Image 1: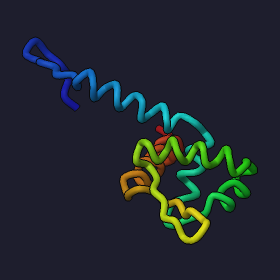
Image 2 (image 1 turned 120 degrees about the vertical axis):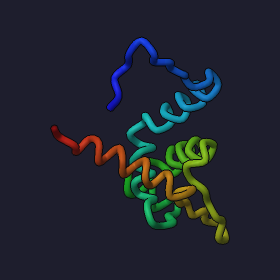
Image 3 (image 1 turned 180 degrees about the vertical axis):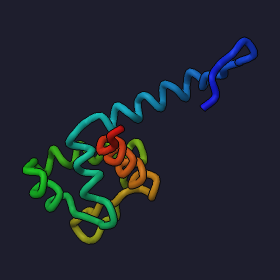
Length: 107
């Protein structure tokens, strides 16, 4: 890693990007939403099964999924009367994996 010296020039990220990133991390800062993301890895799951797995109401899960959808973390497809949710793309799975790996990392 490079150490700063008298010639070091730093370029912070744009204020708007920093604000958007902070909002994004706020969404990820909820344990229930992280549990939902974990359950959606590698599969499509209906709201009923998600609610049952997390011991939450369908209404509460739907609310959390709506927030995750607004940040493009999850997507859904409608099949009849059921909505099946999955992760929006592989970046989301990598985010969850990286967070868990970081927490398991010991020096």
